[in-house]
Amino acid sequence: METKTAKILDGKTLAEKIQKELTAQIIEVQAKIGRPPGLAVLMVGDNPASAAYVRNKEKSCAKVGIASFGKHFPQETSQKELEDVIAALNQDEQVDGILVQLPLPEHLDAVQLLHQIEPDKDADGLHPVNLGRLVRGEKGLRSCTPAGVMRLLAEYEISLRGKQAVVVGRSILVGKPMALMLLEADATVTIAHSRSQDLKSITQNADILVAAAGLPGLITADMVKPGAVVVDVGINRVTDANGKSRLVGDINFASIADVAEYITPVPGGIGPMTVALLLQNTVTSYLQTAKESGALDVK
Image (cartoon, rainbow, N blue to C red; front, side):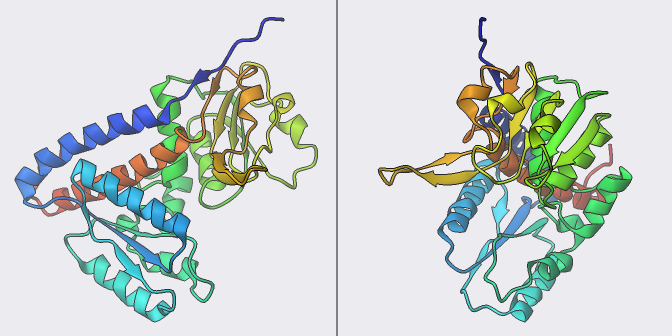
């Protein structure tokens, strides 16, 4: 039997295209309102992975013309100090987006901090108000990773209407909003997870399979329907016998590439899209503020 290799859904290239579009938008609007969009990324402690993510976000901001108001706090920073900083950023007219980099040190309540962010400045799209808007199908800032998945599927003109979609993972960060966005696009959606009984029988029915469980190699080729679209949201660092570490997703890429019609790589798939949609959310908030202030004509 002849095997064919799946087409790659190239998030890296699309993210660059989105960044170019945002750059052009910012140049045009900044000339009218006299300031660039601003994003504040708050990081606490010295988690090396978080530090790398924050650097990457700040670099991406600089590339498109978004001002960074990032703040790096020592490990022992208190809940009250952070809440005061967020309150000040909510009032700061230079700041359009606020993001708390997770994970936080154990003594801090991440959920409570997220609740302090003004919903229209919630660059991560995770405030209960924004999640509520998603449930109701209203306009609002959307969770970056699932929004990035939807944008990537749209770019490749992959139809979702009436399709069977399975999301493996139920986090508030990806799984739940992902399922809601697929539902909004008229897919029939099943949410599964690592404790689902007979996961294979569920995933084998998926025309669109989104793996977002955070478990390396969870999805194998025998779990995938031939011709499916497979989106890998997992980012897991694994170390081989020689002590070399590398990034892998939640799927067994090599074997699934022979079964699926489309597939996302790790790295280079959904990761760059998440950052691009974070920038997009910041610019969306910026444009909204400009319109409300009357500095920008509402189109």
